Image (cartoon, rainbow, N blue to C red; front, side, top):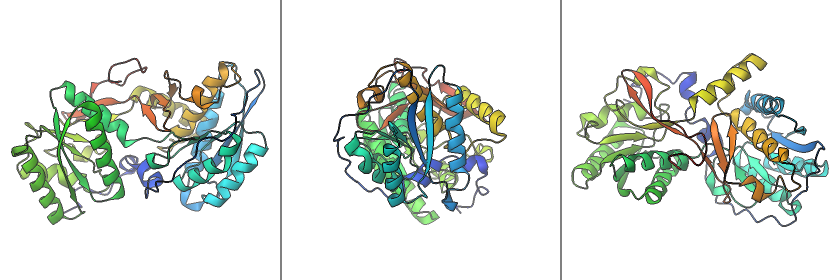
Length: 391
């Protein structure tokens, strides 16, 4: 049953890459506040920046290379800003990551970009907090954010907030959630619940399922009750193409949740599997995408420079360097302080506008999209600044 569509192609594998790599088990680790004054930047002098990557970790495959290349691509686009980028190998190991982070600070690093994995990020942030050094991690696990540890990764809460904010404006003020019983599904369901509170949307109920047809059918029956008896005007799915999304989008209409009456929404990208565009549940459903024109510009530049399409996560390193460069360009001694990093205007990155928040999380400008006539259509474009609609 769960093999309804063929195994995900390369495009499909991009969908939840962040979640698969970076948000394995929530660790609820408490990150302490920075315990020392933060580093001062000397105007006109090169600014040492440490880039921490699992270069010798074989399981990371091409990702460390692409992250480094994306960081250097961002460097090449900085106008009048001198960044001394120094790369350190974490080996994908928290102990090694903490050691090389300490070495980087001893070498003069004013800020750390990376590391990749959440446990490494926690170890690094704790190792350098006493020196007042901020860490811009590639993780997307909000449980580890805070203090001197900031996340650049794609967050479920951003997607959920964008969709439920849009839904509320379209008159959809109540929602039911159907989620797969996995770490990603459970984290996604919690994010949707928080987004419902943020946007004044009633959460009628939730239904979880294991990846088998019997469990999914039971969850759909429960969700149908939320719609027919509970008054839910929309159903939010957390699943993705690599798991049970295709089956859910087929069975939900068949089992009485009419997508022409009840709006379907998805936490994952629904546009990357064209062989799924004929499913009854996908047509007219809402999901988010980044600023696609900006993504295309980044991918084109990367391919021209390095002869290959970048890994889906490569843009995070580009974003980190772009943010650091924009702050250093202001010429302020405190350019890399927490206050500067969390300035409300945000930054222009590889997939559109983004900003870092005081709690260590981030916000990203997203568009609302749907599938119509077997193609992806933008319903509400991504904002170009944080003064725009949807924020």
